[in-house]
Image (cartoon, rainbow, N blue to C red):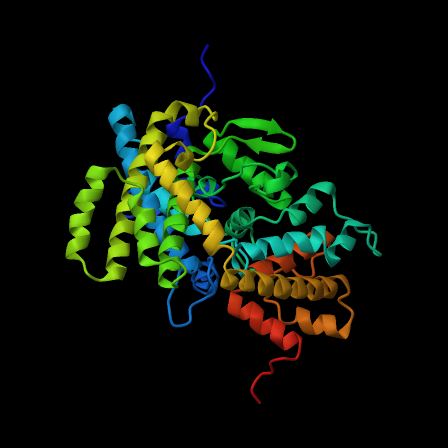
Length: 452
């Protein structure tokens, strides 16, 4: 009995979201998917990532990763993964040579650039701060019917109590903000689908608070999914199988954040050189370790030694994730593959990866500096949310008018609906850099005044 499956010819489309009526084949040196990459690089939201926390507080004397450098590195790894997978698919299916399959590296690279665009300030603590403001904090009152008679639907409430950076990235890329053209960034359907790690509605988010699109963008995702032939798993609440290229974007992210966090921890002296070397060498068998040892003997600079080991590990994990993808092509196209690619790699690197994960939790993610930035992020974002939502709820107040006047006109802060007004506040706050959010917080609290 044959199973329903997705089709590569349909999954990879150069059709642009918002410009469907003008869709045409282009014959230029720069493909439509490379245009996606360039469009993202030159965008303001991408530039703002340079001032958004990845894990560690933004640099003092030692430069560690921020969201921008992380996204660029993920994009590089994603391009390698995509190119390797494309070569493997073309060897297996030579009839796809004239399709867009050779462009997979460009699609994954662009999607990797965009995958963190929706993250608020202060790393993952920013997401939690927004969610808990509505589920535990002063935002709980918004669940009830308001004085003007407005009330959030259950689905809209789930959007806020499970706020997710991935869903916010999809909104940022597709929503027609005030003064913007239809289609938002007007990216290709395939690039947009490749960033949605959790292709289902917020009501299916569960305890992990993971979902792929807000209620406001549900029909946009449905349109993209149906055009590309993603397999529907549920109609209400909406749920689809992942686009296969999502697994490559996810793998690139998994590889980079895990390995680069280890390198950052070494530079910040959270890990010793010996600890770092042992963690990274554990990915390899004895023969490969001996070969790498000879290279390490020639490189006397400790930072360069760590950089060399890091590059070897990334190369190994790219090879492993490519193998897993190609070996499971049928399951991926049938929407039956379970877990991430990294969870199916060979036993030795899988064991080493778990060791890195466990150490990261113990020594990195619970370190004082990381916890301090989370505490500050919670306080800053909660305060800004409270004041801004009060301002859009009571715009007649003098103080409300002062706050609203600071907001860019691209955000529809005076929308007639309660859901849309709250979304406008979240659009504004999640788009802030760490420094901007901190500066606004200080000014609101009277701790910082403009120069006079």
